[in-house]
Length: 454
Length: 153
Image (cartoon, rainbow over all chains, first blue to last red; front, side):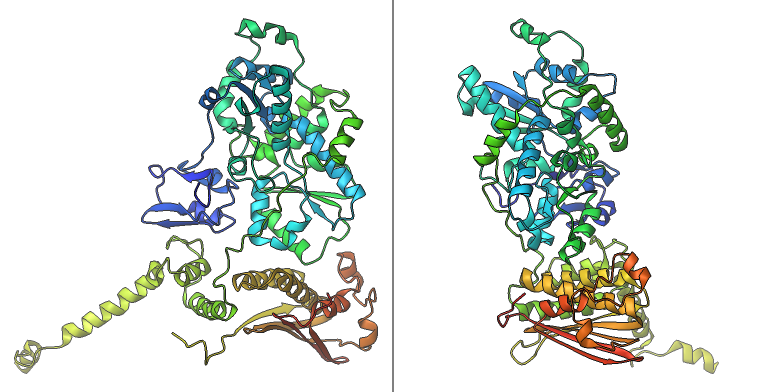
């Protein structure tokens, strides 16, 4: 596997080389060179901002498709809570879940159910352990990757718990293996995802060595199949008895993880704060790094506006989706939680679903390993920045003048990439040519003088 | 190219701070933080410097009419200085006490001026000095060494 895998990639044929994406990327990770955008792999956090803003739809998320189901003997769908926000409120959750069985899955396990477990564990950790607060959610992988690069000092305060996706895959596969006698490795767990970051998280997990998830299918790729199969009987006779079965086991607490504030309300401990949209997340983390916000216990951070309902692979507008999900949750009523308190307590005490790997800092912004050399580069960088026009136009292919100066220092760009600088050079050159043109070789007669004499 | 043996590289960043310019404190702290990350300094150093800059700039915004924040970086240390025109500090010892605040009501209402600024800065810096003239202004100098001399904070 290459050093970096990213779900967010470029469709080269569609890219027209405009500069919309370079401006929106919170990591300044995109450059436009030779008329095409390129993503700097080491900087990308898979937040999906570029997918959202590209007018030519040239930024895509690589996800798995339903074809991958053929690689396993028994397949489980793990729909994210936000997936249900894609449907109208007159649909019913159980029916949506059943549609997964109709399109080829053998079982469906709600990630919302795993979210309830995660909430319980985090609540216990907050209550029992002497942890440095605020504690940050570990659910959004784009935020964690952002922290690795820009806020390494705060990584210690991330909750030591796996994501609901990971927990869901583990429980569902173990239970299915018991029930069916099929080997664990022959069971495929497929997350139905609102975002690209979860694909990257499955392939290169941060909090565990190996992900139990076998595939991540974009909500946009499966939506049509599900819609077509709503409200129909099961195609396969074998599964007929399941037709009457209640598949929807999560409560409204877990379902609400689909939108911002759902997670912190479910964790229900002390003072919580919920922030969405990657630039908002960055400014909040900057405040926290300076030691402000001392009296907050838990912070929910989501890279997408309004939370997972705002994921770039979703169909529905994020705010509309939020309303749909709220209405669907209304159907849940006040049913009891699937897992009894006793079961949850055992999971917590035995340390099930705690993260096993520390999230490592990723110091890619450094100009040089040696401070003195880095300082020399920085001096040069400041000087270059001063000499650039400060228009931040992006025509050079870098997001702003400072970023171009950095690219020059790093050896991936030239000063003449700046159109204003180039224009100055052309002007100087033109003046020099003009000067040269006036010089007459000594052997030649100067016609202009002759004419004057006449 | 410059010879790194004979030449000491250094950079200076300046941030003018106006009266009640509460945004500049945050902005200068994050800009310096970005610079220090690019220089590859340790997380602990970056955190301490960011706190000092934020508190120092905030003090100028809250108490003085205007001032200048200067950040100077060389290969061994970072010096932070604020020079302001303002009321000055009548009793430095009192000002260094945790929880003591003379911040105006409006600043406290915005959540600033909890009386932690100076003690907090002292804890984060290796050297801290204050030169103040009542009714005229204050100069604050703080220094953080990259190779720390047994730092308590």
